[in-house]
Image (cartoon, rainbow, N blue to C red):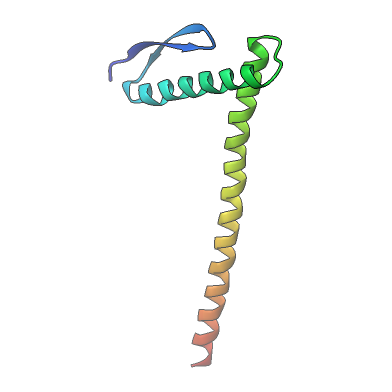
Length: 97
């Protein structure tokens, strides 16, 4: 597969990247989301420089990923508990016959 050369602008800096074409949409959306969040932080909070803003963006996005992972683990645990209860119910019904 042929690589694609793109330039992404994040926090007033341009980053040239060589990527697989399948990554382009996701990377462009990610860069746009970072820029939007950075502008929000700059408008709403007293920030000293772009590095502080970008660190807050990184923290925001990373915490969302971690929280989704935690939520998924809780859902999986709940599903496993329900499956075990259902399995016990089926086994108890089969044992009676």
